[in-house]
Amino acid sequence: MEIALTQEEARRQAHYIKMTQTPVLRLVTGLAVPTIISMLVSALYNMADTFFVSQLGTSAVGAVGIVFSLMAIIQAIGFTLGMGAGTLVALHLGAREQKEAECAASTGFFSALALGGLLAVFGSVFVEPLMRALGATETILPYAKAYGQYILLAAPIMCSSFVMNNLFRHQGKAVMGMLGITTGGILNIVLDPIFIFGLRLGTAGAAIATALSQTVSFCILLTLFLMGKSEVRLRITAVSRRAGVYGNILWRGMPSLCRQGLASIASVGLNVNAAVYGDAAVAAMSIVGRIMFFMFSAMLGYGQGFQPVAGFNYGARKYRRVYDATRITCIVGTAVMLALGIVIYALSPQILTAFRRDDPEVIALGTFALRAQCLIMPLFGISTTTNMALQSTGQSGSATFLALCRQGLFFLPLIWALPPVIGVLGVQLAQPLADLCTLAVSLPFLAAFLRKLKRMEAGQIEQDQTGAVLDDRKHADR
Picture (cartoon, rainbow, N blue to C red):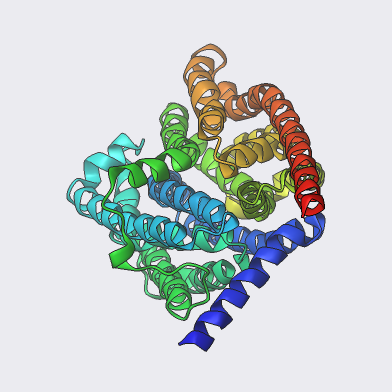
């Protein structure tokens, strides 16, 4: 037992050294690569759903956009608990507080299972009014119900999978999270045509494929935890009975709740306003949304590689490393999104044609909307990094405000105000304008955060120097 304990402590010490001493660019990039792969595969199977379902007709594609709002709710629960618990885990591990880290991880995981179960039960009972509330038209409703009922059944699995993936990421073990997410995503892509066309299940087949794939991801991630591949264990006995722990997890996960929850509300607003112009508008914006999510996944992946570096080193009081990691992520993220924006802008008509070759209205509406969003894409590098930096270092108030900006303070008012004035053009331009406003708000927060890190670094150096002088005096007295 003593040897096993020593080995475990040595492993934790090696992990601590890796997170606090590896050159920042190499560390962030190394953690980001598996996360980017996970995000891109997740986005790819979302696009695969849209592509295969699009072969069933324009109304079926619209159903994908409707259920995307439901999936955003499920993600909101999973990411709120996962990011909240993960942030605490990173800070506690950086401060070498093992017991507290395991308490946060276990509380987040089992809470996600419980909340996902409640959503599955109540959502299944009220599936038709739920789909209507999410923006389904009469022609889209049958497809949306068939799709949504199976997604709801998988809600507990999906919520807890998001938590486990975030826990791995915040420990700096993104490869573990990638194994579960990518396996499920690839399986989803394979199963889609089998269930949709081979078994002739239509949109229900796409949902069943997603549910089965998410279950496989869940099993892989849980197995990795049970095998001891994590720095923290998931134990029902470690779940906190103190309200303060739950409040702390929710507070630190609040930016994710705002980000994901508002994404769902924004998607409903988009669907409702697009529906005024027919199923073609709903289908076009649904396709554009999936394409943008695919591209944005590259930025999210790199940012999520940055988060454990920021949180761990902030907890370890390595403020210079947090400063360097923030700057690097901003620069790399902006460059990547600029390159992707140029490519997708040029290929927009061809991309839309691949989804709805026989519907020129969908192609025309979607091409303009996609190109408008491509023009704003480079801005994501700064705004996303700022939000993630603040959240990862425990500054949840500022991070929550920034998370509210994009889809809440800016997009929702624009999506309701612009269409009555400029018609369908307002539907197409609401998101790019919201992103532009979000950048303008993010810049002062980023500048203030970097200045704060410099002050904290300077204060720490002064404190260390004072401590060294005192140690020298004590040594001289001896």
